[in-house]
Structures are given as structure tokens and as C-alpha cells.
Length: 166
Length: 123
Figure 1 (spheres, one colour):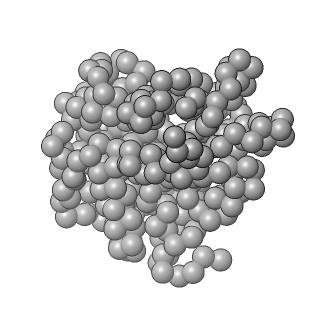
Figure 2 (cartoon, chains in turn red, cyan; figure 1 turned 30 degrees about the vertical axis):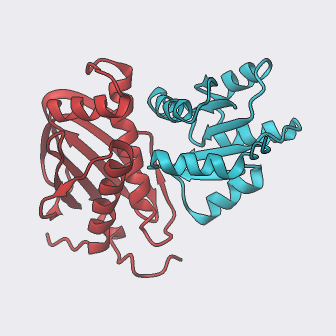
């Protein structure tokens, strides 16, 4: 199945991730080549998931190895945290909310609502999206470690963002 | 300066409280939801409120409308991920004085606070 995805989505999520880490964690993020196509299988230790609906429909997963998630959460919270602390999940959730919000601000005025985030904590868990909808997967690097931003979008709504909103 | 920070996220409250403390604020109250905020406002008179839009049960916008309807003119900064023009206008019409979009740098929030708070008269 060929999946064409407007490159604007790629830059929206890259810029959003960069802005969030710069502003809230005062750190730079590096990005690997974005991979677009059918949804990738994700395997990691901590994942933050959030849905999008409206003129752009899909879901975001921010996915970390446990060490990176812990360092990021501690940097955000300002103290040591365990994975079973409420503030650990809250910190990771805030990141996916802010990345999603910052990305949608780059969707050329399209009306998009975000769901409440969910945090999955489980060593080596898999995130799979059946259906073969187009997705975008970006491997990121930071001083805290590597992580992934994965966005799945419904094919029917991957029209170019350069078309003006209705 | 007395400030109330209203945000469901303890993490975000901590970030904002830390910034306020760096600005010299020593009288800071926190609330995790609108109901707790109204309860604390019975005995705490802030000079500034910093309110998150997305809160469970009663959202920040509804809190602002209710607070203004009670006759309070205390400056309010809304903190949110929403930056669409219609939403900003909605917040201003509700009575918000300034608006900060997440993610924000400490300098941005500090700047917004300094913009809307009345300056101390020169000695």
C-alpha cells in the first residue's frame, strides 16, 4: 500500500519536539531521517500516547527506553523520580501534550482536538497499529538519550496541509 | 506579590512556582483544580492568578468566567497548549489578561507577568 504523507507533518512534529525540549528542558534534540509509510512497530519501555481528532485524525506516541524516560522526567520535575511516582507519568504526559499542541499549531489553521494522554510503562512493550495507515516515525537523540516520536494518521485525512482549511 | 497557580499537573505547578520564587515571590498558593482554587480564594487574595486551561471537571476558561462574574479584577495569565486564534480570543473575552502557550521558557512567562503586573511606584 503506498502511503503519501505531506512533508509538512514531518516538519511540524520535528519543530514541535525541538521547541518543547529547548523550552522546557533547555536541551537540543537531534533527529534521524524521518521514516514515512505503513505504521512502524514500536518496541520500548515507556510510551506516552495521545489521540488527535478533527480535520487531522491520528495518534502520537512518544516512546523512550527506561533510562531516557527517567532522565527526562527527573530533568522536568527537578528531582529524582521512580517510574511508579505520579510525577514520572505526569512529566512524560506533559511532554506528549506539549509536542502534540506545538505540532498542531503548525497545521495551517486546521481544527484539531487532542485526547488525554496515556502512559504505558513496561519494559520491552510493543506498540502496534493494525490497518496499515500511513505513519511518520522520527528517531531522536538528546543528552538524556534516544527516543522516538511516532505519528499515525488516517490515510483519508492526509491531504496536503497547504490546502486552506475549509 | 501574592500569586495563585492553578494547574492539574503538579509538575507544571512546580515549574511555575520555581520561576515565581526566582522572581522574588514568597506568597504563592497552589490549586490542582477549580474547586480547590475557589476554596482557597476564600482566604487568599492574590495579586495574580496563573491558570491552566485544560483541567478536569471545571476547565480553566470556566474558572476565569466564574471568577470574573464574582467581580474580581485580579490579573490572570492563562497557560495552555491551545494557540488557535479563536481560542485566544475566547480566553480574552472570558477575562484573561495574558496568554502563554506551552512550551514556554521561563523568560517568556516572566515577561508576561512583568507586562501585566502594575509597576511598583518609584521611592
